[in-house]
Amino acid sequence: MKLRKLRIRAGWTQRELGDKIPLHHSQIAKFELGNETPPKSISDLMDKLLGADGDLSDLWVHVDRFPPTDAFRKYKEYEAKATAVHKYLAHTVPGLLQTEAYAREVMRQALPWCPAGEVEEKVLARLARKSILDSPAPPLYWVVLDEAVIRRPVGGPSVMRAQLGHLLEASEAPNVEVQVLPFSAGGHASMGESVTLWSFDSGPDMAYFEGIALTGLVRDRRAVARHSHRYDRVHAAALSPTESSRFIEEAMEEFDGCEPT
Image (cartoon, rainbow, N blue to C red; front, side):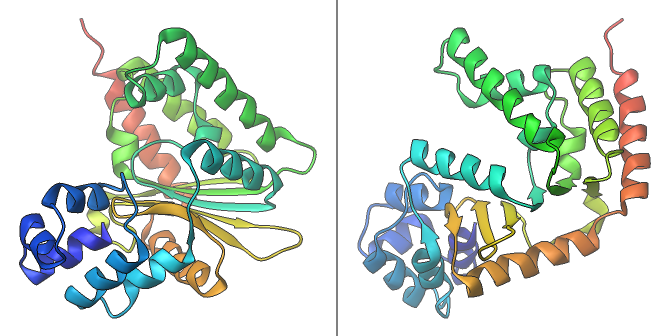
């Protein structure tokens, strides 16, 4: 998202930026979509061309890049060890708060090439991770959801209504907080990306973000502090937990009226 914003601000098309590097415009598209990470030399050159003042170079330096399977393994490892988790999600309910039907539909849509049996295995694995919140010493789990997460009828009205009901039920636990960032809040600090912040009993805080320009794990303290600052701004713009519960209840009622007759 950052790369795309900088390119648009400069008034260039993907082809024009590619010509200046030089690089095929399809490669620029892959960088912007997060499908590939640019080499350090290309990242530095784009930073200079787009007048990013070091932002793109800093992102490249501070992000740990893993193969997809290793990245997910690392994510699960830190998720299980964290004493506090703060998340902003732009598109879906977080895995630990998903119902089985919602998780299945998310997996089915995200992995259209996977056979049904493999999708079911992934759904079961996701549901098993939910035990983290039921452990004897569960982490603080504070989630801010974009309104789009609440409004999008993933799996249809009945699946979505059950999912929203599950969110309300989960938020009654003393270690779980759910907030909604409404559309009326306008632009915000994490547009186009989701972020997770982990705190631990021992060791520094860490961040994990998923965006259009780049996805990865962040350990550098200064970079983590920047992500935390952005999350704090989103958190401050969101509805309070009480107001969010009312918002979710109203959305549930709207899905009640969406059932086919």
